Image (cartoon, rainbow, N blue to C red; front, side, top):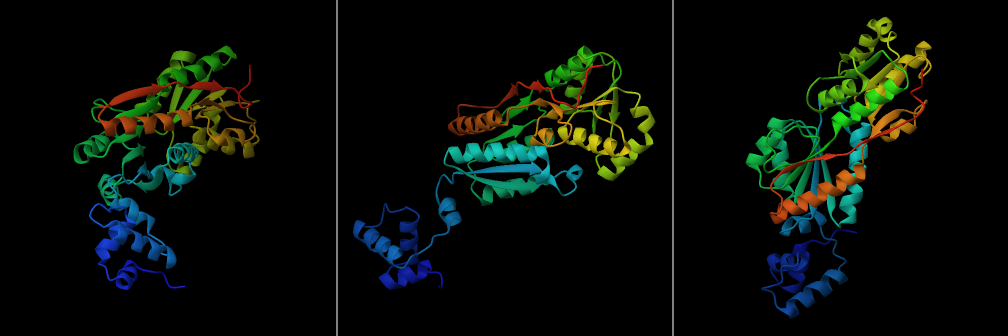
Length: 330
């Protein structure tokens, strides 16, 4: 069946398309009640299907929350498959739906694309994940749409609400756990040594004592070659703390085909407590963050910023170590 258009309704009733459009979008202040009734009856009779996007964009409040993630090269085209990203989206989707709002997702490395995205869809607010301090400050200066940041590293949080974790304490809990289990040679791995990864590393050394740090390649094939070249050195450690579950699981997948047993020969722990932790064997010890709590706070802060009750702040959310089978006592 051919789709009914606004112009078809207008022609049938002898009205302008603007009048019919105003009735559809709820702008009836200057339209007589009789005309509203006639249009609504005809819309129902002709089974007119409105464009939801058009209705939302025509309203002052679109009720759309944009979630924008940095499609960084380290994801190698698989951003939405990353366990942390997937878990964050899942928690945000549930919270946004609970509030009767709509979620629109975008992956990009380009801050200019974020500005166009926000304007094009008349977003009420945004959640930004994975960008750097310069990006957030640029967006703050060029947009009037409120936004919150996941895991930002901000010297000046004015106009930006940053929802980060107690990364130092998470690393500290892992380090202390390794130490209490009798480990004396431990290694921390990350693809950089700045911002939150550095905080996790510093917390780890504070909890464990003297430990080593390896900066591993972002690209997986290069990372596997790195592990191969450093395998003998790697096996001098009894425990490894990876600053993300992705890198922890990746290391375990490298070791197991070589007959190197986790945790019998080497213990491994991660960070984030993503669903993958319970899906691999042995189950991965990890630092849990509360994704549902962060999603709820993100929406609360967006609402407060829109009302003018929030001018920018940093909230550091608690984390807790979840012990599983990938770590053993010596």
